[in-house]
Length: 112
Length: 112
Image 1 (cartoon, rainbow over the protein chains, first blue to last red):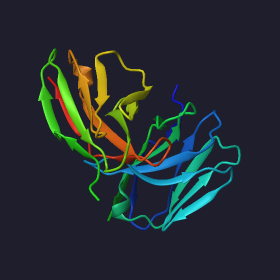
Image 2: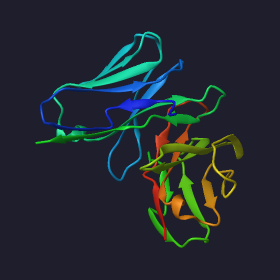
Image 3: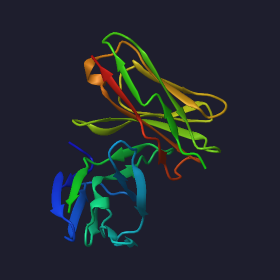
Image 4: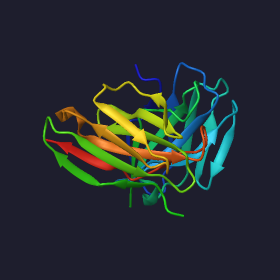
């Protein structure tokens, strides 16, 4: 059983469409991170959410942390081909250090 | 500021051989972590080093090992390679524990 389940696993949409991807768990977290990984590159941190119910915006990307801090969503408005990539949520190990547990990932493709 | 540098970018090895991968963190970063990424298992944590000491370890067999040098550069070694070790190996660095991770672009290892 994966600690962090992401859905959908794959998403192919047309430019200009809106989409939402989800990151779910049965565990409670003190914070949650979202990364984007483009082909041939390492993941890049997009945002960290720390408060239940928190909403953060990064241009056309809106991130929300669930009230109970067990889940999160990423909404993209008017998707562009440049948004194509693998979106990963991740949580830090509570025992200290920088050990991250990643979600299963959502592969997004935005076509012209 | 130079990012995280991983060498080599691509590597092809034969079953039973061993391999050493190298990671140079961002200047000033003292924490280095390693992750394995495969299509089936996703991104999985291998280990983390901080000030030349292993701080966290993932659930991988003892064939996987690493070390960190006094200049924070890190190497990971995989002995007695198996076909299932074929993966993208990612290194990430951070200033100190629990600060944002910066990933390199990885080393793609293929075991034949």
